[in-house]
Length: 166
Length: 166
Image 1: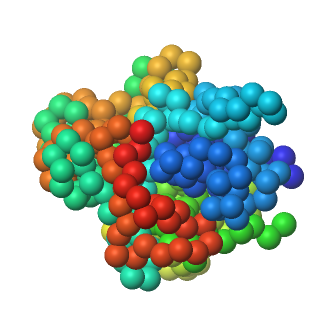
Image 2: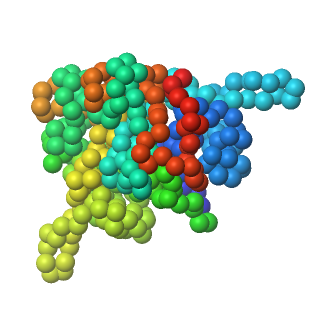
Image 3: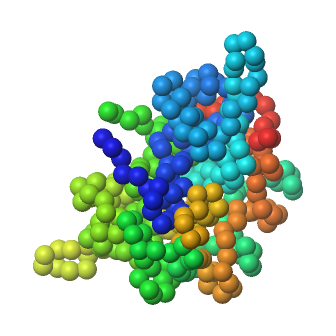
């Protein structure tokens, strides 16, 4: 079945999902970030079919989220590493992970503990305001039309009204 | 085709995706958050099939991310609202949105401008350390085994070694 494409939506969440929203893809990015750079290691760790992993990695390479780096000449072999855009996704993965720690807690508690190298402490990721630094919650954000706002398929028009997210 | 379930993975990203990783689901949450609470409004805005929307909403209600609230008696009609767990997902959506604004920019620029009600300023969401408050990036985080770490399907074992995310 042909899936609806989100690529033309005037919504940056939709366009992000078009790139990284495939089932498995966030876990592939997690593995690459955590240090699994070789196809066989990722396939074994995720117990994902090799066909599917190859498809997902090709898409991530095409979208410049992951890059291939040769590590062997004959035969040619490649490792997978995050690009700068891929590395920018890591904080988003950490925020999803923290939500899961709280709301879909695995038996035994959070599987991963995060340490912030800059301060040396264990931490949980918080989403904060670039202007005042305070934490951002659903209750304290208002979404307004931005420069690229437009009516169209899948576009929320913000109804020409203020929205307080409450 | 039966999709692999992530629900039993010892990974909070996987368990989160099991709940909210379905294609369309993040956009449904976006719409509910932005103030579309009725089935017909969401269906029309997303141009999603009504069958699929009903399935996705049922899953979100079953998982306590979205709740139904009656707004009419005869016939019974319901609105959809985010639960507290659903509202906790909003900052994660904002972080994904910001990534898309930067890395998958729609024509014309970001479709949405965020205002932080607490300080009144336009802002971009940042992911910061709960301990020191500084921004968290892929380069400044080390993932270590947490209390729920375990070897198993789809589990990254963290290789009994420190990992610097570089």
